[in-house]
Amino acid sequence: MTSELQNGEKRLVVVGAGVAGVSAAGAARAAGWDGSIVLIGDESGLPYRRPPVSKEVVRGEKTVDEIRIKPEAWYEKQGIELRHGVGVTSLDTDGHTLTLGDGSTLGYARLVLATGGSPRLLPDVPAGVVTLRQVGDADALREQLTPGGHVVVVGAGLIGSEIAASAREAGAEVTLLETASLPLPRILPADLGTMYAELHASQGTDLQTDVTVSAITETPDGLLVEASDGRSWTAPVVVLAVGMAPRTELAESAGIELDPDLGGIAVDELGRTSAADVYAAGDVAAMPNGVLGGRHRVEHWQGAQNHGSAVGRSAAGDEKAFVEVPWAWSDQYGHTLQVTGWPSAEHTTVVRGSLDDRDFTAFYLEGDVLRGAVTLGRPREVRTARGWVAEHARLDATRLADESVPLEESVLP
Image (cartoon, rainbow, N blue to C red):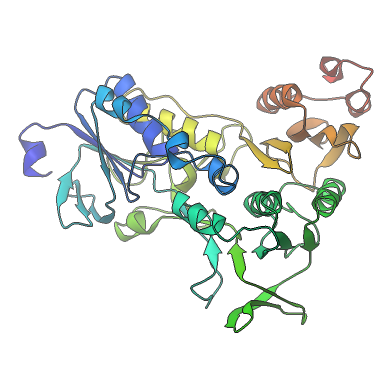
């Protein structure tokens, strides 16, 4: 322990000022933590919500001050000391001490790692290639999204598709590249992926699939994106949206156990890591799956918020196992896609509604047990499906697909 802690100071430190970190700090105080709380973030300014970055912020509809997680007065009222614009360079779990980027050290009685993730990169990309993770990235990109301009987006997952939609709304010409044969390959089976491909096309986005990017280089005409099959595209702006890598460096250097399959920091149902008094929360945490068994890592806002709150309470001594069915959303071209549970292309898909009208819920069944759902324009049904996934509800596929039958009557006894 540090001398401060030996002299009786009780300090909770949260590293990472995203929604998981802010939620952990607030929940710890609400759960009765009566010592000091320090929240450390490497970005300047008050913490903000990340989902609007690829939508309202990049389109210029909202400023960073309009997407703050909490106002400044909230931190003061909760007695949370916010240290922003400084990173953490090392962690000594034996001495319960952190070393910060400014050279100072900070002791802790409890530590929550809510370090989130960083955009994945391709090798040897030029400095002009853009990623979109922080609000500063959106500010820089927005200046280049002009009517008649051209942007190439690499990756047609949730973030890449949102960036493409935002760029089209700004009037830019968009080429969207995807390694798989259809967009959103991690969450949509072929029929829904085809529907989303048609949505992109209807909005004027040039979606190119089965593209393996082999190189991105600077040329006198702009950035050249080359595919392994010989195709190429040139544009003044290239955005990489090829996934997120959990920021585990601090934990790994301190000898904290990582999950070899999921890539995050291994935690138990309370958020505890392999190091005494150290917890992990949010995108970086590889946690037990209390619904399906095994382990999972969730990279969604709602999951980070709720897991952060649960881990903050655990760190404060209010220990309850965290069990939750994931839920996420994505806004593209004026349509809101919602996903809950663990949908897989390997499941049987039952569609209620109309793909052509873009008004539907797709239920994913393993046998007759619901494992996940994807909806467009049907928020009530996604809420119902989320509860059913938690309950391992068994459903009658025929009744489920028939909209003349009330949804609840599709549940088998």
